[in-house]
Image (cartoon, rainbow, N blue to C red):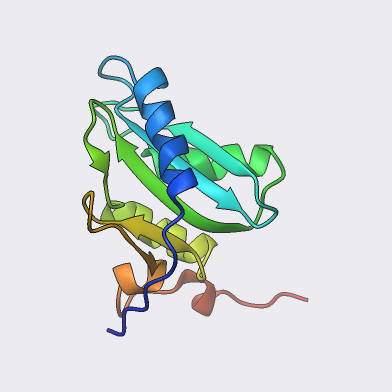
Length: 137
């Protein structure tokens, strides 16, 4: 695995931290995510926890971004409530993010060691859904 690091978007982290602090209250919403769209906008979302496996903040963010016309995302970060800081995406989110945005960058790491890496670096030797789709014309 060749991990290439990129600039850390601190404004994006601050946006997610603000949403985690102000919107994640109680047990139903415990994570916030923020992504920078290709046009520079910041899109935010929170998870919808449910014991049956409700969607993570990153997955809610994909729908939120689409509803706002942001179909190209450059960078994403998730932040936990109660000051937990940056939290890396789970395996399901890594696969979905890779499938939707193969060039996406993800902010990971603890405070003081934050770094931005490619989603492909977080899911090496992964199944790529788009590689197995038929072109129907």
